[in-house]
Length: 382
Image 1 (cartoon, one colour):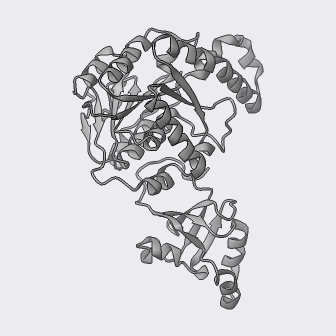
Image 2 (spheres, rainbow, N blue to C red):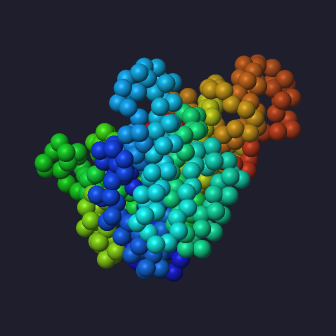
């Protein structure tokens, strides 16, 4: 990483580094990370810290038998939310004691990020904090989030934050040195990939599960995050956060792990937000897949090209357009609810269908993102 004026770096630190034994926060690994942040700021770099760990930090505040009594999923979720509430203050206090400059807490849900007005508000808040030399510390708001509202892991959250903050670099800490061609915990001959210039199915095939029993993100979510970030032009590093040498090498301009090169032709900001942050609420299966080559083609879809409608969504919600063979075609905003689209799709009377779509197209033309076939095996709809 090279120091440029006002260059912004997002650093993502996971639960295993914060509370490795689930017995509260530990300075064992955090001291080196805090020193890295201090040295970055001394070089004129603006740092945003995305820190997991509230649940792991708060777990010791609850008796061991509390989890055993939480036999239902709802009870266990309530316990985890309570752990997050208890652990978040401890985690912030732990970070704060390492620095002689102020910090600020930002707790987010996916609902905050996918709403355009709130997304821009987040962006303004982060920029204002950085302009006043305050370190933003971001985490998912595990205390209040639900399955429908959560990002789910802080790897992907860090990429969304990096895009919102217009960062130059994203550094994701892992428990291994970077991306290997096979799991290094299981294969002694695994080879580290020092640089990745294209994220495709072969790169995703190298991702295994999470080795740590503390965190929620494995290599898969880190590659997902890298894909989001590089499409915004953000260089993304996966490094070993347990090694102090990783941070020394980064400061020296060296690559201690795997570098995913940011795209030389990044997506437009609003299109990136719509593609990589907004989550589709349903799907529309269409018959005209071979004729869909532009956003204008999407906006001009006719009702007789709709084969099926999946999920429940409202007018104005984001949807996926798929072909009947399952290929992802585009992400767009629907001008109609799923219930009305299902009704339209079942009609044989073209005049009746045209009466619904005469004044408004099926798809809102201002928010359309064409998609490439997905190498990423992540869920598309919430």
